[in-house]
Structure formats: C-alpha cells, structure tokens
Image 1 (cartoon, one colour):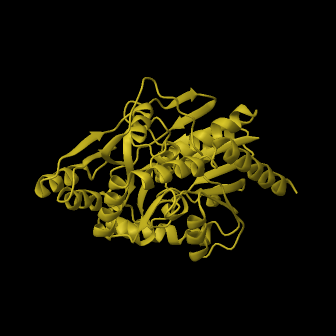
Image 2 (image 1 turned 180 degrees about the vertical axis):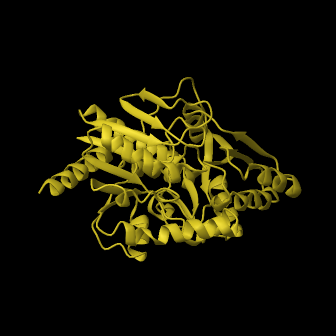
Length: 365
C-alpha cells in the first residue's frame, strides 16, 4: 500500500501530543510490514521541509496557525507526483476536509472531538470556528468510513451525524525498559500530559491543597503547555508546593510512572487517555475524572477510581484513600498492570492495517 497521512504535526514537533504518538506507533509498524507511508504535516521551529525518518517520508509546510489552509494545495501536489492508494486524514483539532480535494479513498481518523469543550480552551471567536468546523464533518465526510480511537469518540461521531462504518482502534502500550533502579515514592501523586486548560489540571492543584490539610503529599505536574503559568500562579496562591517539570523525555516520563504512588487525570474529555493506561502499565493506579475516553481506560474500584468531573473534594478523597491504604493500593497496582497488558501497539497496528486494506479493496471494487 502507498499511504498518505495528513496530520497537524509529526512526533518530533515540540507541540506533539498523543495523536502523534498514535501516528508513529501505528504507521511505523505498517511501514515494517512493507508498506510506504508519506506524512504531510506542519513545520515546527527548527524542522526541515523534507525529511525521511524511520521509514516515513515527511513533507512539512506552513505552521501551526495556517497548516489547515495550505494543506489542500500540498495534498494536490503530492497526489500529482506520488503514487497514493489511500489518504488517512487525521481530524485532530480542525478538519482538513480532504474529501473535497481528492477523489482518492479517504479514511478519516479521529482522536476526539472538542465540541463544546473548545470554549474552555480558547477565545469565543476561535472556539466557534472549531465548533462549526467539527459540525461540518458529517456533511463533508459523508461517504467516508472512519477510524476512532475509542468508543467514546465513535459515539461523538454518531452524535454529529456519522452513519457510516466506524472502526475503533485503541492505542497500545510501548515497551519501556528503565535504566537504573527506581523505587515507589509513597507520598508522590503526579499528573502527566500536555498542560492545557481543558485538561482541568487546576482541579488537581486544588485537590492537593485539600489533601495537604490532612496528610503529607508530594505533587508533580509533568508536561508543558500554555496553561503552565496559570497553574504556577494558582499553586502559589493556594500555598501548595508542586514540582512543575515542564517537558520531559519518554524515559523520564516512564520514570515518573514508576515512582509515583498515584497518577491523576482530571480532564473533562479525552480521546482515550493514553497517559492513564501508560501509568497503569507501570503499576500506578489512576484517579481520574469520569469523562469520555478516560472512563474506558480506568476500571473503577479495581485499577483506580473514577470521580464525577469537577468534584475536587471527591478527587482529594480518592487520592487520600490510595495514599493511606497500602493493601488496597497494592491490589489496585497489580490489577492496573494486568489490565494495561491487554493493549498493545502490535495488535492495534494489525487492526489498522486490515482496515486500510479493506478500504483500498472496496475502492477498487
């Protein structure tokens, strides 16, 4: 197969997140199976316009602010000069509407829809732009089948009018071997992920303030993003000591998973909750908001706890419960590792590859 993938950025872009992890892990395995993958994405600071990495042929144009406007022209140019069997259109953030610019088979792939949550993240004008853009997906991709990262995302697609086939292809868990010894820090609670407003990390900061009144706690926020300064100000205002690490490497991220007693995920909405399942794969129970995507990766009362989104007091109580009860923590920790072991990138890549082959075959028919 000759596959063209359109995504906002590649996995080496400083702004890369879970969508780029998914992209790399799935398609690097498809490449190893003998298929060709071209990636069209935006150009981050210091990145070259054309590069070949790990079998991917990468074309970078435009920037984060205008990529969706220049992508159609680049798509047409690539289709004129390259042999392409199928276009994989990643509908992360603002859709590219590639079906309007090519007669090739298009397979839209979706991490999650922002829907009304976008109004928590940005100004009303841009939020309305994203909201309307998502609402047009049902109209402009009306003949395309979809791949969704979770059942929650698939349900969102049905809610906006998608009646075609939707294949759910979950994320997997990478195999990580730590160098050197690590030990669990019994008072350490961590958030890991992008630091964005809609992630509601301020709920964690407020929960730490509540826990602090009753027992010792060490808190860590691992990741970078445009909400970081606000969170630092809030921590100072509430007089809570939080270690803000900023961006860390993959190896350091897994070191955090292996040392934290608990990992938290307070987001209002996720495509699937990759960092939550990664944490569980490292024996760390997760205290998570009962939000779309996240409720699929945390088994309440077995691998962690789900609390009603926005219930900061409830979040604090669950954190205290797992900090104080060693027997329960040990039981959850063991179950979390077993649960996470059901997900693998090899399995997910095989499913995605089969979907691609079926899509191409149906187009030929």
